[in-house]
Image 1 (cartoon, rainbow, N blue to C red):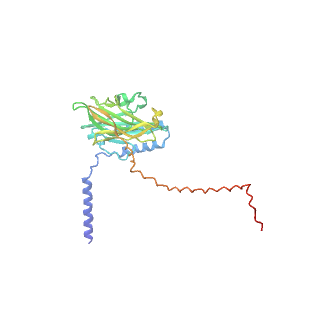
Image 2 (image 1 turned 90 degrees about the vertical axis):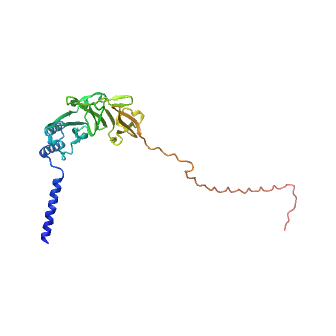
Image 3 (image 1 turned 30 degrees about the vertical axis):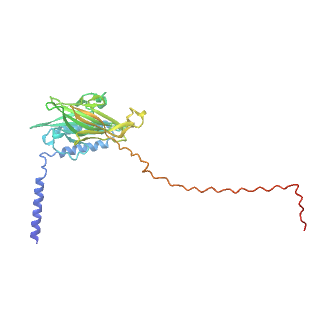
Length: 325
């Protein structure tokens, strides 16, 4: 009996070993020391109340990641413990985007990002982005370089090509927490130049008769705006924003979704705007037959008043004697 038990345990151990061997392969290089160093910096940022000191810590995180991500083994490494930092792959894993932010004590935000491009049998190329959104005068109409980036947190990358022989454009969907009054949703475009540098913004958005380099939707910080890419419909869908009252036009802290949705579809080398692709349900009008009839109220019949007969007047000439008994 004991031999059977031992045989069963040995067989189970062999199954576990083979299942582990057949699973995902462990990376050749372990980057846990780098993760531990970055986690320690993140804890220090959370504890400090000095924004300038926190920005120095973020620069240290940026430097540690930039040095690590040049190694080819780091391109597919998950960095699971760094939940504060976003790691996003482009379609077909053509590049990797690393993105995070810092919240200042006054409610404003600064964003950090880098793009990692893998190279064959060479160290990966790391392109750092510098958030300069406060200095850009007309952000919807200006092309921007990597050192003058309009900062945001990106959560979706869409690849589009203007033509077969032209360069590829990557459309980013992102959010900017902005400040205590408003938030922003951003539709950005990025492309690689011939020299390997990146360029943000391109005249690809046709909206209300105007061509823009990127789209920025600003709305109340107390609201949430829908902005997603529907792959089966091949279009971007987003909430239409409007002010609470007509006299709040231009005051974006009073803008919110109004139950309508617009869309963007890539046609003829541009993202074209489509209005009201989703509308709120119409209220059904009640027909007269479907309305309940009011109950009949029985009114009491009016009671006829009995009129008193007037006393007959006495005739003074009446001399009929009275009987004295």
